[in-house]
Image (cartoon, rainbow, N blue to C red; front, side):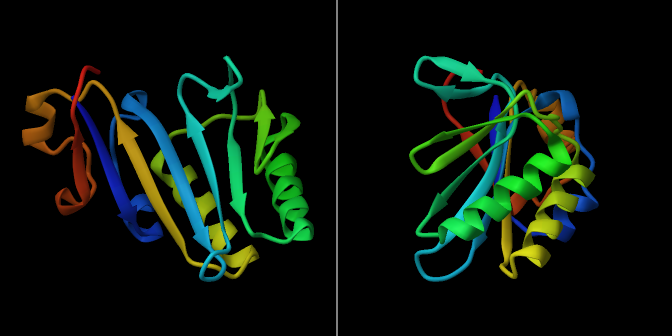
Length: 153
């Protein structure tokens, strides 16, 4: 089964332990105002770009000033590498370093929050979680923030 943990705080993620090989997707969303926000995200199987999945981390933005967008791109590129590709209100870092460990996601969220002076909220989606793993709580995140995703793994 697939499970998505949403609205996680930085401290909840940094101290979490879970099977890294079962992370399917993570996202860090940063609110800069009522409508201004950006998010950094990663998909295990690549992020769709037209019909081709692009490996690496990506980010999207909404009503964020262009100078701030450039700062975010440079920050991500400096820390994770990759070739920068823009598409409307998204930027892809093709071939950038990829990670799914809790401490790395939490650290990035904390860095973004501090650098851009905005609160960060984290979502992490897992795939192929067995019923036994669910009962044993092998994903050490708050059960109240778990949403099962219906459908095949």
